[in-house]
Image 1 (cartoon, rainbow, N blue to C red):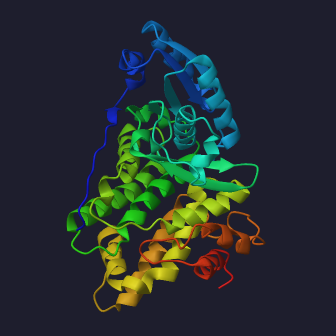
Image 2 (image 1 turned 90 degrees about the vertical axis):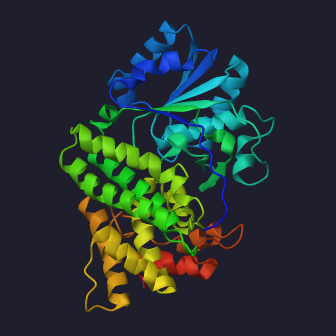
Image 3 (image 1 turned 180 degrees about the horizontal axis):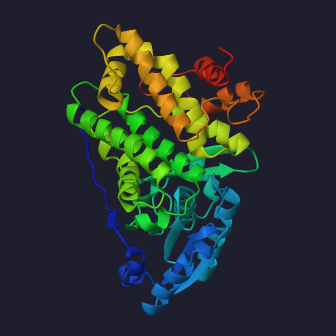
Amino acid sequence: MRNFNYQNKTELIFGKDTEAKVGQKLKGLAKKVLIHYGGGSVVASGLLDRIKDSLTEAQIEFIELGGVKPNPRVGLVREGVTLCKAEGVDFILAVGGGSVIDSAKAIGIGACYEGDVWDFFIQKAKVSNTLPVAVVLTIPAAGSESSTGCVITNEENDYKRSAGHPSMRPIFAILNPELTYTLPAYQTACGLVDMFAHVLERYFTNEPNVTLTDRLCEATLKTIAEQGLAVMATPNEYAGRAEIMWAGTIAHNGSLGVGRSEDWASHMIEHEISGIYDIAHGAGLAIVFPAWMQYVYQHDLGRFVQYAKNVWDIPTEGRTEESIALASIEATKRFFKKIGMPTTFEDANLPIDRLEEMADKAVENGPIGGFVKFERNAVLHILKIAAELK
């Protein structure tokens, strides 16, 4: 196990009706709040009005900026930065899922910077300060409610890039599983894959002697798979929704990665797919991850066997390590398919004419991946597996 420092400042307020507490939680923290959201269900369900009523009751001034889309755009972030500076906003409240939270985080760092906010995403500037952010979570998926980073798409050039800093962790996050009852099945499924992938990026490590976090990862993966199927079958059942909401937070708050090397190649490859085609991030990960597994499994057959046994309960007696490893990859694909996710480009109705471009862009800043390092040709090979060309 590696040396590590771990600190998570995000206060998690979990349970029924907890969104009613948002005004009191912000009292003393904020004078003028930007409420940032997407639209649609947040408005139609009355959640946005309840949030505004809570702020009004707490005598906290607020302004609004809606319109966040999946794969949040830098154009709206820039609009938010300008608005915060002009209006003297000192706190941002994200009401929504990962896209809204990521957009809010990007606005927060941009509002404390004199240049273009995109500079942080192309490594031209480093984050050092941000407006504080809090969250009312409506889609368990990205784990952005207590993570240190965000991902933004530049719609002008089809680039999707990340930025991060410890200061970007939200101050608090309100997690009410009831707010997820009305999520469409597709959004629920995308969220399940996203959180599952966040754990896999940490689980597949070259670091020895990390038994505790191995077991924590395996427990989280099993919970997502088991409770995910239950939630897809019974969307309005509180117990399952609660398990999934908590799993999404645990998957990406950093606790499962302590003392470990991590990978993240699959995420970086997926960013090229969704940056170009605007596919949902979870759907893109469902395409990339099995292809990545197919490419790397021989690097550490033992870890794939462990994954097969401890996550998928795959029998091992009388079988070779390779057959067990391959069975774990099939089990992963089977889970993704059961919840309605694509596992190939064809499944997602995506063209395969820009694979070379995606491979080039994925490694623009050097090789990617921690479990296995990938140069451009390896990325292209994985994309071709996902496109069923190999």
